[in-house]
Image (cartoon, rainbow, N blue to C red; front, side, top):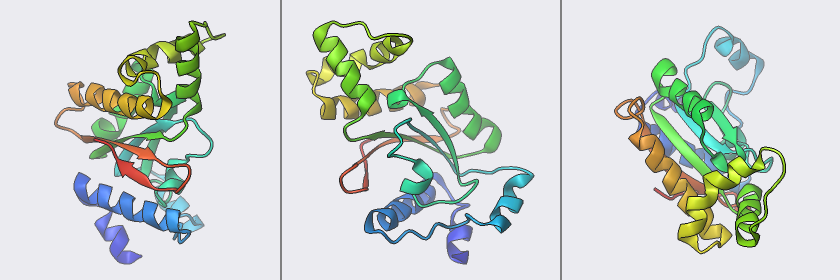
Length: 194
């Protein structure tokens, strides 16, 4: 565990490697649940230094800290329906690299995303969803257009679009490595998309 804590302070590539290792443990049912005790809570109470930002979906089955088997203060997690972006979400993502020096941003989509499924149905049937949900549908429309409206390809297309948007952000360019990944609800594994 001590070696893992030392390694956690490394580069974006090292951070991704540690996230992959944690995900393998989670998927295999061998989670360490590191740095999740009162001692760690006291350590991070005065300040935070997460190594990565994870922009993920609000889906209750995909909690990034659990999926990557990390502890308190290791990740700055930003969650929206289907990891859609708007100015406030982008600002939250920017906060990690700019203020907290988190060198990695992971855009994490997932299998059978409810928001993507609802958007695909709305677009296919030309139905307007209630409340603020049309904003989610509008954000997912470009992925719908390039995926033929099929949910699995639409999830991956949206991950790639979100990564491209964040990589083009002038405040993130040069301050963080941005990658895309997809979580399998069936296996618990995260695979890199871009």
